[in-house]
Length: 272
Ligand code: PAF
Image 1 (spheres, protein in one colour):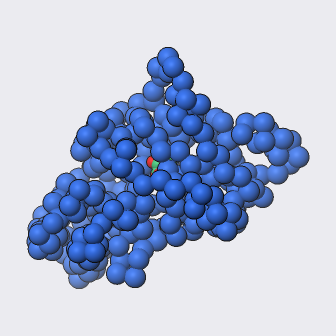
Image 2 (cartoon, rainbow, N blue to C red):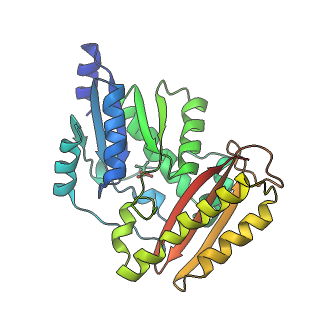
């Protein structure tokens, strides 16, 4: 991979990069098309990164289908798909991790301790190996994007970090590899995440400035689904991710909900 990249760079070509954990869907393909639009060549990585899953999380159950993924990546114009094995990236004796101090102390970082340590470590490693000019990430993982932007800046990665808008199913559910694990009933119920965000956006547009009122309305919408269990619903400063006490400028509302055994996240900017 490194040699390929070095060779293409040497020929004056630019490289964009879309890191994924596979089981690709239309959301990933949109990231690839955006990557393709930005640079001469597009690299996609597929690696289900064990270090970003907690011991009770779904690493083993995470959906995988490499042959299907390769065809989809090709159809979206990927020039190279990098598919390292666990031992390539975490060989015997591996002992160095990247930790960020502030941003991971919010949202998913609280319910998934160690998650962003794993994400940052693997993304930094992939950045070194792939050595792209630009890397594209989905805005569905709002906190992940913020954490990666911070890391790229703090560690002087000469890589443009691009965020790409959430791609949604017709009923508004944000596309995710985990959606395939929902039963038909759960799949219908899962639209409550989006509905709670749209309702919040409307409340703010109508002049509501109290986050508590918006959060209560969102909780009521989600709790109306018997299989839904709220992990968090937060209204935060889009830069620091700190909770806001009043909405006077654009804020981000982020939700994480378990539907059955599947944990889903979503977010939306709310602008007064
Ligand atoms: O967003 C993902 O799919 C993963 O967190 C990433 C960025 C590929 C790192 O494993």
